[in-house]
Length: 342
Image 1: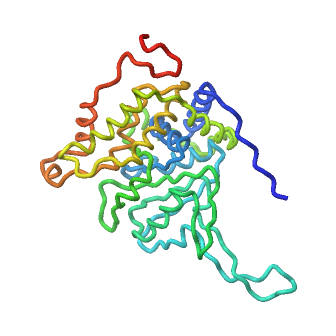
Image 2: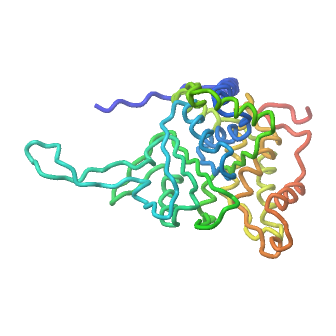
Image 3: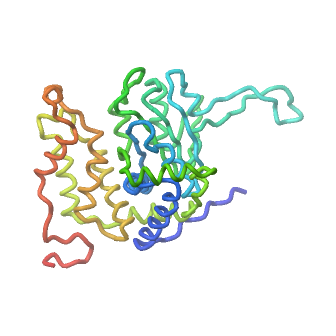
């Protein structure tokens, strides 16, 4: 008899804030100064999305991913992107193995799961994998399943892909297509630490043990699923929904942006704003939630026109100018049941 998995508990916004404080403290045992990148990872997980971590080597991308999985007590898998990486190296394959039946004997096909069958999958240097291998991740990222040899296999729940790439080294790489970029809920930049933080990092590695060993589980899987459901229940007023759609629409109206954000981007921003509000301990979304999440959710989905690129305009600046044209709702109800005149 198959046992039904336990239902996630009914959690509140206060539980979300408490879980965020606990998670942040746990990860800080290994990662110095990673609060904002960690917040974006937590938002992506609660919104059932994925994260693209784009930064130069050596700033702690892998350490952050491993500490994140460890603090949430989730299974962790890693794939190194290389030109010879095959789709089956990610999803798994069937091999000939001795039959388990004593009566049949001989050999039979046995499926060996690939590293994608985990909770947190780190795809390091994803842009070094070929387009064929990159596309093998599309079904996993969108459908939470993989189709192998005519059979569909569900992935564990929760499931999140954390992909990294170096934004300045392009030799021997394959740029991610727009369809792949659109599957990432957020793009994260870690950046260099300040001097004080870097001194603390160096001090930690003077010890004989790995700083990652300090990270202890802070939130269990059942609570995580409850928080994910709580994020879906966060109230978003009609005014703020219109504001969100207006920001996305502004990216399609500028001549310097050749490819604007898609309707999938609107849904992603909606879910990300809900998750951010939950982590802040609120059961309603504020304009600040939408505007704070918009760059991380939208910029990597855009494409600048060739003429604008030649004139030195960046996507970040073009998006900032586009968002600046959308007025912030003021004096309107953002919480269910509040007085619009308040």
